[in-house]
Image (cartoon, rainbow, N blue to C red; front, side):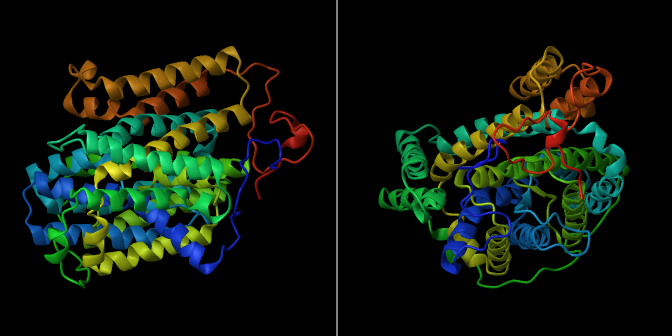
Length: 462
């Protein structure tokens, strides 16, 4: 049994190495969970601005290659760059709207020029994190993790129904496939042990995929039309440096940094602790440097992937070596487009059954962070209520901000920005009660009845 510190029962801890074959399938499980969402960014943007099939395929390749490289550096750091945590990197939907708007008005060269420059704001945040970390106590990071999970749940429902733009959205066979995957995943996780439990998501997706093939809704045509091998080309789309584009992406990268801090908190919560300063700093360095380098070759911005945080908490597999294998798989897929095309044929509804539980686990991880480290007094409950209320409110009713200028509507209409802004503002300017110990867990606490507010339970960051 795990100690009473809010940690979960880990099948494999951070530095443990599962057997090779099991590690491969566990890494593949991470890839299968984030593959379609991360390539969807390239597909959506290229379709919106009218790119051809060859350019679209190239954009997908670059996303996979640099997602794999960034994941490997997160797991196996290069000096101070990298968190040494099981973090999976990929392209975020947060950048889709800006990429479409800027690409349509200024061209794709302005998009990648802005990415190369604006991504460096995350490097600056990482460099100066010791100065700003006081704004991100467990109450704030926990709320960020919660809202990430909450606002992604509708995306999971769209997947389960066949995809938001699917002409047969909500068809019974889509819902049936999603429920099949969900049932297998949850059932194996709750009622089985060992490899069957930790591989529950992958098995659920595999069974759902075979069922989708059997009922004839999988189209293998794109596989036949895709090449076997391709290499990245720097500057393929050119670079232009438009001030408006750079400012827009800078704001989005600040949001991405907040999301990444939340995701890292969700990962370390599995051990009953908050991320250390060096872990956050190293993780943000990868976000910034990886996105800027990827932009040179035509990759969209990279961020930590929340659904993979859910996988870690759902399966209890925290081994960074497993995620390293996942990063290697992404890298290989990027150089071999035909394999990528096969994985991309998995129907949205099959993935929907898996991502629903992952997004829910992300939200639950945020709850655990707050309950571990914060007292549920009137001050903190008001901060939680206001931050989640505003964040979720603007996400589900964006038309409420229609009277604002366009840029302000985009900024304040983002659930993570609104929640983070509210939480940081209230936490900073509303004083804590005198009897509340303001600190969070840094390491798992052992003992019969540890309290997160007992000074003896606190440990300093190393």
